Image (cartoon, rainbow, N blue to C red; front, side, top):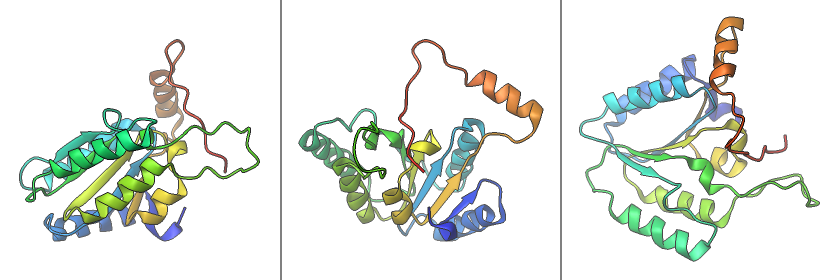
Length: 186
């Protein structure tokens, strides 16, 4: 990850991002990435951005439009992007990990490359004339292509205090029906 555009939630750099977001007034493109499993803070940060804009944000769930089939995904991405009103002041893409393939560890490469769907979406959202938020529920699903393209990457790491950490781990315990995300190599 690029150190200059990656920082923690509630850090001084995050406060600077909020200032820049307020000054933008939804008129200029900027790509913001929220990534991490601490969903309470991530949801609070999304709500904070929503309060700063005039009108309602456009929210798009990528689980509904990105499929393993490239051409089908491209058509659905185009259709959803064409439906975005020109006067939008914020576009939120939820479940951005849907853009990623699965790392199987059976290849010779230790690097996970961006899928064609991910490259296509990142190329297309450059034309959106307002801030765009990509929301990753899991930090391990964030890849280099996204971090290089993003103006800001905000990390939502698990709590550090013992009591908050225990409560957070109990809340995030999955047994049956768990989603098995593939961790990215470091």
